[in-house]
Amino acid sequence: MTIITTKTVPSHSAGSFILKARSSKANLLDEAKAASVQALPEGFYKPFFSDVARNRKPSPIRSLMPLETHPGVISLLQGKPNDDTFPITSLQFTARSPNNPDEETTLVITGNAIREGLQYCPTDGIPSLLKWVYGLQEREHRRRQGEGWRISVGTGSQDAISKVLTALISPGDSVLVEKPVYAGILPVFQSLRCEMIEVETDAEGISSASLRRILESWPHNKPKPKALYTVPYGCNPTGMTASLARRLEVLQLSRSHAFLILEDDPYYYLYYGDSPRIPSYFRLEAETGTIGRVIRFDSLSKIVSAGIRVGFACGPTPIMDAIDMDTGSSSLQSSSLTQVIASTLLHSWGYEGFTAHTKAVSDFYRYKRDIFETAMREHLEGLAEWDTPESGMFFWFKLLLSDDPDEEGDSASLIQTKALAGGVLALPGTVFFPNGGKTAYVRAAFSLLPEEEVHEALRRLRAMILEERMG
Image 1: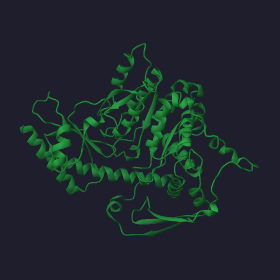
Image 2: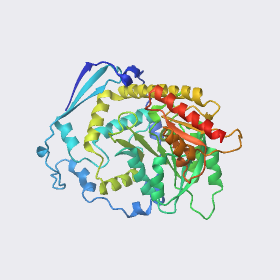
Image 3: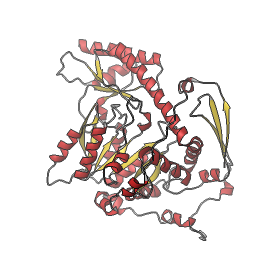
Image 4: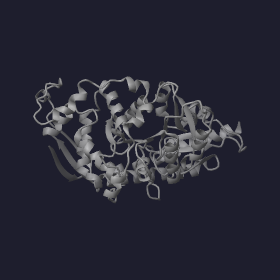
């Protein structure tokens, strides 16, 4: 049971900016098109699985849990604690209205809902959250249940990404990785002892030309890469968003060269560009041919709460099964309680409320981007080069440490030593290079700092660049 009340509250810093957002309805895939969708057979994925995934056995208990819901079954299966022993009887929290930041809604989780949140749940997620996410993916990406894919809830999307990589990659396998790439995923690749093949990127995102060259010149006696890892919206660190043409070319290459696309998309809802949002790989594959080569990862971290640790993977059923077998033998499941909290909030909003909220969030980050870029122009004009991001929360800029345009500078020493000593903390670009290397690029996050601190940070950085140029 969920009790909802609303009240008007004084506006505050974030709420006062996040104004009432326009709601929109996503078009649903029509029946004729749904019937024409063709999924790859389950046997297609057998060569992709790692040695670990092939040898992992399902949990003898969790694999039988779905049978508990069969009519007439009396279950003696699980060693669940009895709900009557749980001391928590209800939870209450307030949330800003997605349509009016000055109004708060009070949500009370009680009855069956709180019991669900305090008890073990199915490995792939609580039913109410799964139902909502299936509806979201149908509205947003035009993908329906029954097309050979399903959802698995993770403890944040990185949890699901790590498990998919473990299920696919054995030591010595080759994986295609954007250069630069999200640094947080590099330890996972490194722990799997795979070969990371760098694919170049530019202002349009991943370079399909670079990817094509790699694949067409691949040694005949060496197994081709199993997968491509890509962050297509607001890429961390570059902030770039892959164009539609690039995405279509990458999809075509995945079909021609038999690799899977790992679409890590935490900034999808943080898009604030002037043009309409480009369709996801997950949607495009259904609109251009056989489905089953894209595994999509979404996260609530950037749009609801980072600490709630709720993300979800969508992809071919055999690969989702591999995720769940991993989870079932490690953590058993993602937290039931945080899933129930997220589900309660999302159901209270509905899809139109969710759209309004994410639109307001993206507007907020566009505002923060504009503040940062204004300060960049004031303090670093002529001392740095950059492309303006249209999604996410990062600027990726090249330091001009010399008047010689052919001389490639190295940001590592300046950023890691002098800048830190001078009171500025940022990341040198080299930490985002899969196989290392020198670069003049720097990543700066603009999500948190107030305007005066942005100006002060870039003022300090300017002084250090000028000092470095003087030698």
